[in-house]
Amino acid sequence: MNHKIRHFQYQKHGAADVLSCIDANIELPAVDDVQIHHTAIGVNYLDIYQRSGADLSISLPSGIGVEGVGIIKAVGANQSRFSPGDRVAYVGGPPGAYSTSRNIPASRVVKLPDWIGDQVAAALIFKGLTAEYLTHRCVDVQAGQSVLFHAAAGGVGSIACQWLHSKGATVIGTVGSEEKVDIAYENGCDHVLLSNDADLVKKVRDLTGGVDVVYDSIGQATFIASLDSLRPRGVLVSFGAASGAPPEIDVSELSKRGSLYLTRPSIAHYTSDAEEYQQAANHLFQAISDGVIKPANITSLPFFAAAKAHLLLEGRKTTGSVILIPEEDNARLAVV
Image (cartoon, rainbow, N blue to C red; front, top):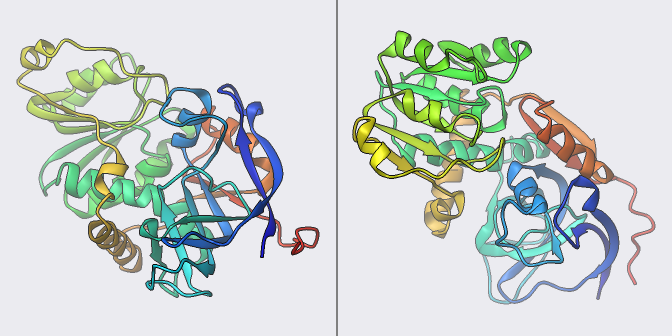
């Protein structure tokens, strides 16, 4: 039996106004899928990259969104890990999280502990798993090492800086405005600088002599400063492009600056193995339970405000996480 749902899609790349909300039918899940009724939906910069055309890996027209929390409504014939009624979360899989309900491969889904709320889970699951792989598996930062983390008051930065602090690292965070300085300190940063400070590199080097690791999700505006802030044999983890794609670089520049390492990781490659994915989620949930990670500020918007959510993120007008909440009254989405 088919059900009516609402979901966002876009027909062409462009600004936030290319997003349109439409009604559609949802079929029973395929044999390896589950059907989830969303209770909260995460909004991420990846969504913006895909919508704007900065990421051209998605065929058009396309749904949007890769992070959601909800309740299992139906399961495919080939899977036995989940049952109707299970509370679950997911990261990755085909775009389409901006929907009231959807089908998704069961391999992308993890069960939620009973103690964690839907909105907190939606705010933390993607960003938390990103922070987990960045700080524990991409580079396993050790006590006594120094780290420069750009956007320390943002969604990923808020979580990662707390985790790095708990590991005993010296954390220098950057923020985009004076209003966010205190937030970065609350996230565990030992020092906070403005990302557009003309003396950023000098100040980082005055504090540390050069950091061991830089985590850079800003991209074009900070990339060279990130390289110049590293000690010899330091590591630049470039994992985003909020200000535009990082500039192309001659690999010899890495040698000139001290035999540096440069990596461009993707969460897809750190969650592609189902067992490793579940272990990472469990690691995140344990860190939240232990108080190592405290939920950041959550900006909750109605489901229909998806375009506004994108504008807030693009304008760096928020701290913490942005989520969409589907409307409770689904009366007109009746069974057909």
